[in-house]
Image (cartoon, rainbow, N blue to C red; front, side, top):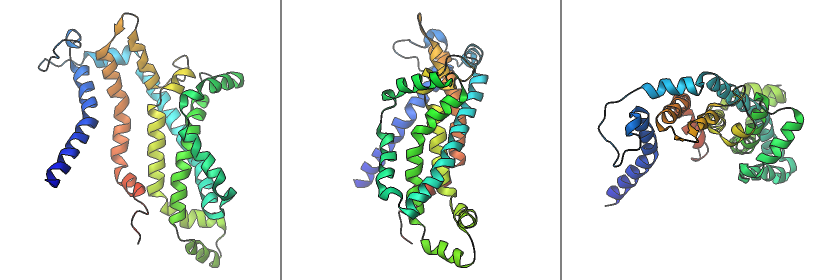
Length: 269
């Protein structure tokens, strides 16, 4: 009975995760006249016209390029700041944990609470409708999570490894480069994947801080299928699938590193 309940729970979880994607695929292939049919049409002749319409009308090419620039830029910025910050918190106990908790608490803050102040500040700085503005906004929300994950990783590394390297004549920077960084693949994969996914999928800041296709990301561009005359379900679903595909491929590629990073330290050696 326990085994039956276990697999039933797994099946429900998989269904809950996969069903929305299957529904989007269904809408993207369904003819326009059947999109809102009641009851829903299960059997129909698939059409790929929605993908062509979505690509042309939403100008998805430049939007995908913007998403890549913003996601990669914010992730690199997050790694540049969070790696030394986490190392400092773990090895030197900077601020005795108070600053680390304050940084982590920023992750608990809803984005809607700060989007208006961000808009006003970025307007004064001339960062509206720019890649730099969206990158900074996304990086702010990823700093705390990345620092906390890397902090736990650094705490798991025995300091004696670094002391031994010091005895061999290595300086602190050489220890980081030759000893610590080679061990960083699992947590870096976790931080990179989550930062990229957050930045790629984020809508609120990308929508509020941009006005044209010069810096608007693909998730913010999909909203144009909501019109005064109704929702274009087919093209919107096709655009959503195009937006999902890059991160899906990336996650599959880094899957083994993500699992190792998330379970790092769970079993004592």
